[in-house]
Image (spheres, rainbow, N blue to C red):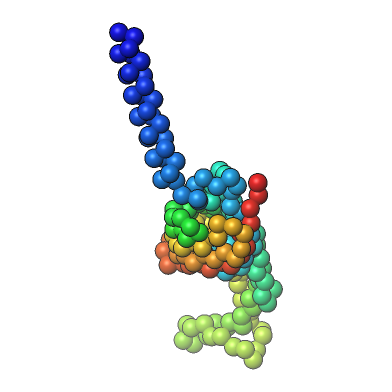
Length: 198
């Protein structure tokens, strides 16, 4: 009976050893890395809406899998200003530095726009409003959307992130949405640098 039990335990240990050996040999260098991937990148459009600088990291000691990003963006032109703060969870699928990236997050924005002045007159004879650049007796001030809020963001795209330190690239579609709008065809590009932290 003891010999029979010893044979069963030996067979079980052998089977477990084989399964563990196969599992370890099937893992890629991306998933058994001793250090996590970290990136700093500049993004055009995308979750930062205009232009942003971002930091991205994996949550485990691996080059792929679950991670997150945080950034800051700013844009100003002719007195109009936009500040953004993109935050996103993302997941990388792939190997050898070439990944499909999926992500979901939110971007805080704060917009300050200068008011627009228009010279508008009411023509009582025909009931129409007339715009004139020559006469500033009539004026209408239009405020174009000052305020802040949140945009939902999604990411579906390609990421090149080297296994060792080096240049990184991302190209993706980046749908954005809020309580009133959904823009499925928004996109983004980013260029940056991947480095490792032990």
